[in-house]
Length: 193
Image (cartoon, rainbow, N blue to C red; front, side):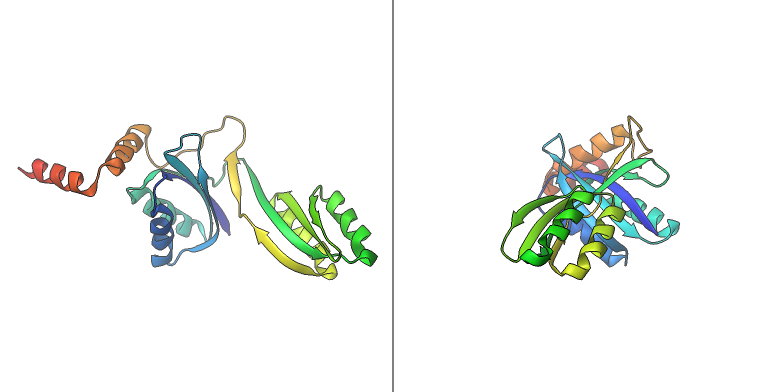
């Protein structure tokens, strides 16, 4: 089963590597991973689709919440969300089949972003099922190249799902993450005295 997790992380070098390393080290299977800046330039949002049962999801969320670079983790299980995937695909379309390929593009509400003598590049966004259906419908014409973003997800309306960290804890964690490792060691040493 596929689960979607959203993580608000510090927008710093190495964060993506650190988080993907955590998933890899624990044997979690990432189906898709999308990262981008948020309305706050110091933070990025990671949307992670994980394959596995509820136990795997719970473990992944707990492990993510422990990382210093992670400000907040939200599990979108049982939350009404809008999920979208973006795809660009180059489909073989010589003159003899171009019209049929363009009909499919229109039927799926996609856009032909480039047309050459023998192929068409199509841009298509929507739920994963729509993307998969378009791929199956164009496969007989010949898919030359395909690229997908992975799942982007956002709760519907003003619905705010339960996060795995309070806002006070998140602010404290963000403050700690901005401190240099040397300052963190000094602060820990001072507490011991």
